[in-house]
Image (cartoon, rainbow, N blue to C red; front, side, top):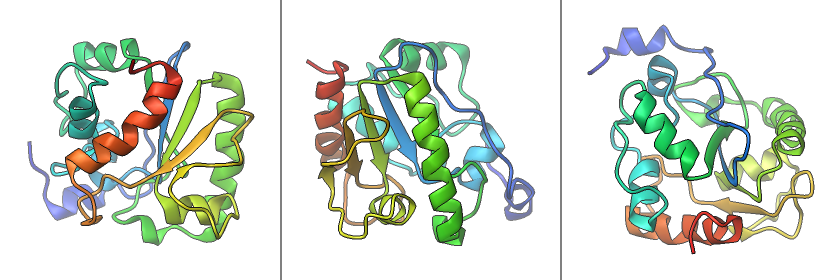
Length: 188
């Protein structure tokens, strides 16, 4: 299903629920929902986003969910059963992450820490270095496992899977995403 620009724009500032259930082992944290994500209610939903293909390539999921539309109950169950959850640093949908203010990112970091303390995953993977730096006030952070944790949970900062990030491929994202997945027990 496709959307017109006007249809997508109507989802600006909308929110979607977290894709998290009790027992989550690996929590991926996006920057904020894009308009396509808000329209479908599915994290990383925009066609061309490499998040779900990278999870399949890494071996975390047995097959690609139909992510450019609302997740089916079967796809949702596959993701949850794999021990994977998805949340966002900021809840409101925008066309681009650079529309978020530093204050929004900092408030989102506080909220995320509370959620991580509640959910207790084995690992947190934030996909977006600049947003992590700004939200957690760690301007010198580099990609990879962080010395600091979020709510005492080991934390990684990884490349963003958006098509706007031209530096990474599905294969390089899969390799990066596999590290916290192994630490969380999602991958052997």
